[in-house]
Length: 294
Ligand SMILES: Nc1nc2c(c(=O)[nH]1)N[C@@H](CN(C=O)c1ccc(C(=O)N[C@@H](CCC(=O)O)C(=O)O)cc1)CN2
Ligand SMILES: [Mg+2]
Image 1 (spheres, protein in one colour):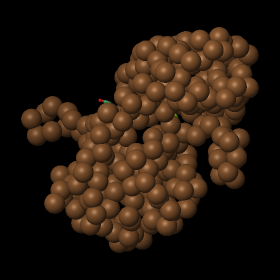
Image 2 (cartoon, helix red, strand yellow; image 1 turned 90 degrees about the horizontal axis):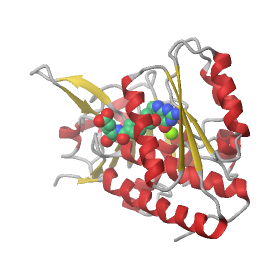
Image 3 (cartoon, protein in one colour; image 1 turned 90 degrees about the vertical axis):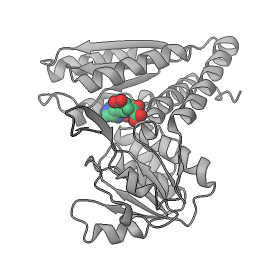
């Protein structure tokens, strides 16, 4: 038996359609057009693609989209000036600064400057803390998308053993915190973890977010487990062309797992869909109105 493939692309399309319906209701009934501003600093080719896709999806959902581009040589003060202006702009409800930032810009300082109410990435420490203690918060898009796919596939997550491989601030840590909030028994594994294959074999839910191509092998997967692959790694093939692979060796894991997300077409598309959903949530909270449920 091979695993069910979790189609993140199709799921994301459903989420984006729902956001579009919510926006239509907000415009018609509350004269509210949610606005998202995305700040890109520098010329990283992958970041440019993600930012373009975010702008396109935002506009397609009927929202206001603003893109601010700064040179790769931009100073910290210049980036902070942009953030301050967006914090004060009432037509902008969500602010996202595309990561990674050039090395002369202090990422933490920039994220800290974003108004937590407009922090649609959910990276501000206020949102991290609020989510951790169970208060309403903006939740990071990639982990949020993973939880949505897990709930869709498995229903109730309570009591399941979840192993998150990776401890980054943008995926690993918030993912673990969200799984804990779903009453999973959560293990965070990382580069110093002893006998990582055995730790992974204990997982009913295995989330791979290490950024190392195909590191997680098929025999690390518990038979029937649900595998969520957050990795997006571009590698060179034997013929010199490149291809995208995840952090999981898909061809091996698909033979053992119960369900698995592919790369591409799994977690990635959900990230942008959840960004749109977060922008609607942020706009409604700022306007003090209930989120429509069309
Ligand atoms: N401020 C942020 N920066 C970054 C985030 C983030 O959530 N907020 N996440 C990543 C990049 N990212 C969005 O910004 C992102 C990455 C990948 C995808 C995606 O749809 N991937 C496709 C494959 C795309 C390809 O062909 O290259 C897939 O997996 O199917 C969407 C968004 C880091 N920075
Ligand atoms: Mg995000």
